[in-house]
Length: 111
Length: 114
Image 1: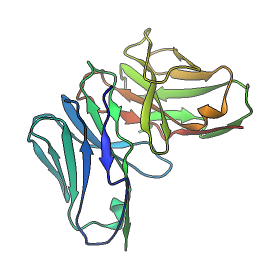
Image 2: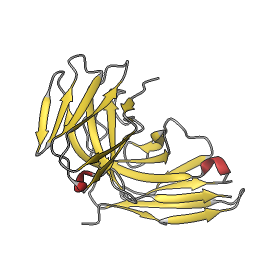
Image 3: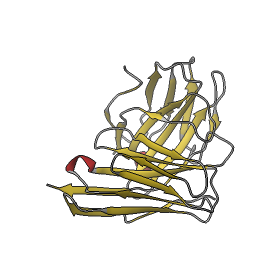
Image 4: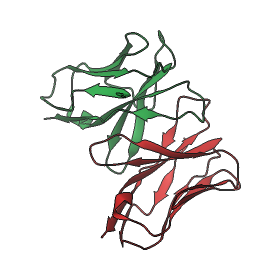
């Protein structure tokens, strides 16, 4: 059974701080996705990483896929209150249709 | 743009009652999914429909049934609700079922079974 473990589970920081959240597995995935979910809403895709070692940037967010395609990280520079939410990583590699989700990192950025 | 629309938004059931959660997408997507989200457990796939006319079990299908009514609509039915089915349910769709496909989610149904 493929599992994705996210850490930390909860993070509360001040506006302007940097942070990194992690997504780890013992399984190899063909791609990893990061979603952000706000209260009362469904997850929204932020990025998909496909190649081992790949780095993608989305404004102040930097996503990295591990060389062995078993892990990923999300780094946020100078966090803002608008970054508050639940960050979910999701792995694919089961022949489609069966994306596996981690339990998420709940981020709270205080003004 | 509506995207994925789920109804109802909230529901309270008594043990043993039945209900159907409705989902519709207006993006002409081929694939549709039902997930449940529980604290500390992430999103778990209940059922999916790769294309119109097909449905398949996901990770946690017991106690649920689904119907892909047409390309737009995918419903989830609880025949005899149990407290263990208290959860937030999300419908999602994607253009196809490929590994890199983007999932589009509805805003969820919060279900409580007493």
